[in-house]
Amino acid sequence: MHRLCLLILVCYITSCAQSNKSDFDNIKHQDDWDLVLEDSCTENWTNQWTLDGLIAKVKTSEEGMHFIAGSEYKNDAHHAVLWTKESFSGDIKIEYDYTRTDSATKCVNILYIQATGDEESVYEKDISNWKNLREVPSMRAYFENMNLFHISYSAFGNSDNSFHYVRARRYPKPDDKPFKVTQIEPSYDRQGFFKTGQTYHITAIKTKNDLFFKMESEDGVELFHWDISNVSPIKEGRVGLRQMYTRSSLYKNFKIYTK
Image (cartoon, rainbow, N blue to C red; front, side, top):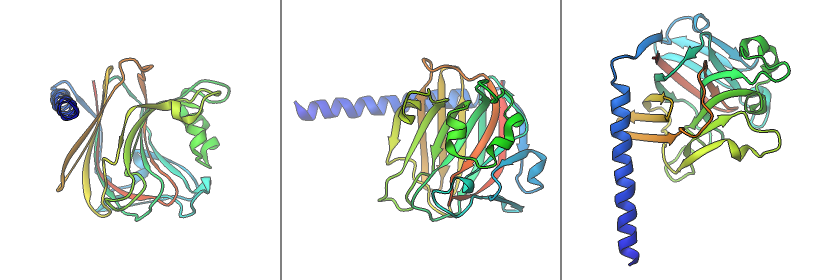
């Protein structure tokens, strides 16, 4: 009986994975996506991005845009976020080449999708209007005051045996609740491992009902999916790249599509 139950579970998981891949491929290749931002990441980064954080460094070269957070662990001033200057509405597809350049054993990278302020107090809908409040870009300033989808990746360890994950969240966190409530299930624990120095092509897609995150490299492909049909929708906002303190990465060929 135990073996039968295990076999049924494996078949179910395989079926779900195949269904997710089919859905992702269908959505990704629809012909009504409009390319609305394209950045090779080899020229002046300030043309299309703004930076939260006074300590971080951003350097561009033919290799791409090297985004380097501060080196001091547990010092919020050493966090950093790059934001697109433009805001994007509706369904969104984000693609870029990502190379981890650190060997940190803690902290994560985060992709912020369609961020706006929660319009409480000074936190206006247009997040550029309160940029000065994020000169020290603590995590709390974002998860308490913004509407957005969050995907964390390249998490923690730098060896296959260390703990790592890919997770999605919906901000903001209610005042009386722990941060855990922002998490959208499932959490893909011990999946989505990113090797230092290896380039991965990232594709993230958000529609009304689905959130996808795909990583492709010479080691193969991993696809992650979250059902957001019952999650409060996000309709517009800026795209952001967070480097937590001690983390650094190279970005190239950044594209955003909407429809």
